[in-house]
Every structure is written in C-alpha cells, then in structure tokens.
Length: 464
Image (cartoon, rainbow, N blue to C red; front, side, top):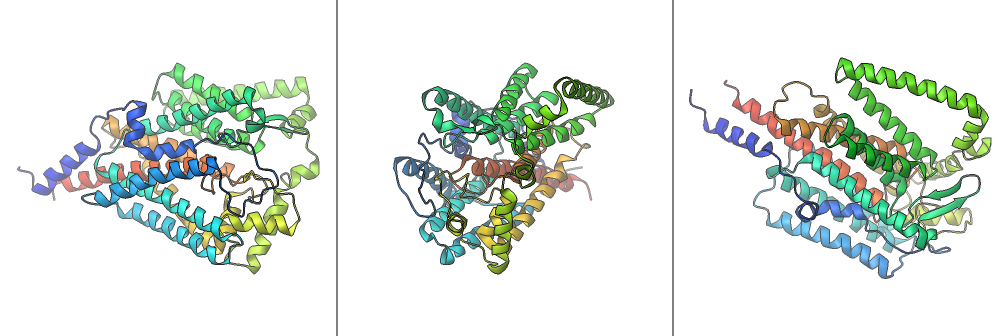
C-alpha cells in the first residue's frame, strides 16, 4: 500500500527529530545553543557592598558586564526569532509560555507602585530577555533538536567550571566566596562568583542519574557525584542538604522500579544505610549528631527556620492588605528593611529576599503573580511527567535518551522547588540560580516537544 503524502511527511519528521544525535564539542555547543551561557551568571569577582540599598539602582563595571553579557545573548535570540522562516510551538508549550509572559507583564505593571521603580523596570526587562532566549531555543530545537542528554551534561559542565572558579578564588579572596557563621563554622557559599548551594546539588543529581542509567562512564559519573556531594556539604546549608537528599531518594526509587535486580540492590542499600546510620548515632551520640546537623542552633532558631517564618509572616500579612504586592524585586528590599530598620547588606540573597521562592513571587507580583507561577509550575510538571513515565513503545535509542533527559530535568526542578522553600535565589534575574532553573524548564519543554512530534508522527502513520 502506497503511503499518503501526510504519512511520508510524518515519517520524515520522526526521522529528523530522532535521528542519530551528534554530540558537539563544548565550544561549538555553546555557540549553537547560547542560552546555556546564561548559566554562567556570569561570575562577578567583587565583594558585597555593605550598607548599600539595592532597592535603588547602582552601576559599576561588574553590573555593566553582567547585563551586557545577558543582553548580547538575548539580542541574538531576538534576531534569530525575527529571521525564522516559520515559528511553530505546540499548544501545550505555548500555554506555558503565555503564563510566563503574563507573569512578566505583572512584574512590569508593578513598577507603578514599586519603591524602586528603576530597579523594578530593569529587572522586568531582564526577565523578558530571559524569556525570549527560552522561546528562541524552543523554536530552533523544534526543527533541529539537540542531543537532550548532552544539554544536561553541558549544564553540569558550567556548574563544574563555576565550582572550580570558586575553589580557585578561595585562597586569594576568601571573603568573596565564604562566610564564617557562629555555630556553623566556615561555609563555602560562593558569593557573587557562583551559588554553591545550587552548583553542588546540580552536579550531584545529574551525575547520580547518569551513573544509575549508564549515560556515561560510571567512573566519570561517580567522581563528579562525589564532587557535587562535597560541594553540597561545604555549604553547611540544611535546606540544600535536605533538598538533595529528597531528590536522591526519588531518583533511587525510580531506578529501583527498573528491574527486579535494581529493586534488590535498592533494598540492600537502604538496609545498609539504616545500619550505618544506627552505628554512627550509637558511637557518636544522638545529641551530637543533632547539634552538628543544626549547627548548634537553639530550639527557637530551629522552630523559626533561622527567622524565616517571621519574614514569611510579615510578607503574607502585608500582601493581604496590599494584594498587588510590593513591586518586582525592589519592593521587598525596601519595605522590609525600612520597616524593621535593618542594616541592609548588598548581597541580595540575604535581607533583600523573603527566603522562599513562593513567598517571593507573592511579594513581587501579588496574589495573581503567585497564582500564575503555581499554575505554570503544575503544567510544566504535568507535561514532563506525561513523557517521563512512558515505558512502552520506546524503540529508538535517541527517544530513550530524550526520556532520560526529561526525567533528570524533572528531578532537578524538584530540587529547585524544595530548595526554594528556604531560598529566593531562583526568583531574581542576575543570579545564576535564576538562569539554571529557566534552563532546566527549557530542557523539559524542548524535550517534551520532541516527544509530542514523535507521538503525532506515529498517529499520522497509522492506517485509517
């Protein structure tokens, strides 16, 4: 039976989408997909400006360099979108992009009542710059998709480079990348060079997934996992450690379902970990282990999550009487610090944020802003999960790697959400974590697009 023209086109689309992937050298990859250059931040080798009110605009060499870096990447994205012969994005993806666009419109509208209008305007523009980079990548990869697992490995490569930059900076300018906290000791948090609480877990999660599913050399994956785990531990951050632990448990449970042998290995490892934990607690003492985990913090400090609950309470109460929020980025920096007459630090990961991703969206965009973000997040997870759980009809090796990329990216997104319960580093442009989360979401959307194309091609090729 002769195939119809539609069937032939569908078959060609399937071949083009899931052709044997070619892995590009690092330099060529970043030139081909410059959105991944956003993950660099880029790093800024400057100290925190103590006493500076960052709800108002400030300019120096590093801020100009950082904004210029992002502007060049977004300008290229704009030119490529304009020059594209055709722009097609599946409806499922477009609905998510529309939510992201309307969220940006809310941020831009908040300039009208922001106490730092210039800062809110600047960050709103940076938000849209990032969004156009996401759109350009999705448009480009619709017709010429990358090797999706390579996207994850390149993301990990950037994290490793930044982590190396932090370690190199440590002996020369320790104040840039570390902090000494009473009770917690030395914490390597990365400062303006890179966020170790994000870099370490991302290296560890991608490497652990790659090790369990044999996506690369297991020796290489194991080494990078240990590097990521060490990076997580030196942050001395309970939230980061808990988030990584939760993701690794989810990863292990998913791997255990792979086969009976995997289930036996998981059960044995779980039982062994319980035994080892019991031996450690028994030899060291439960009190000492608890104090070490909590960095010697008092019961009151633990109960309030180091004062975070007081910040969240203030933010929610303010938002009840001001449902439009405080103004994008600048609002909380100004209102909170002035309300309590706090000595403001220029590090925006400290007093300038609510220390919670979801509360930060509330104060930045009001109740409508947090509603849009929650709906968008649910739709992203639902879309990715639709293909991540697929186990049958997977015939092409490139299709299997695409599913692996979706599953690993979903685990990374879970980490962002859990870590975001006590941090706002994923909310604010000009912070590396903001771009990491956007790139992770982009990988989920792009890989899901490839799977959608395949599904439609197969449906069109069935005889009617």
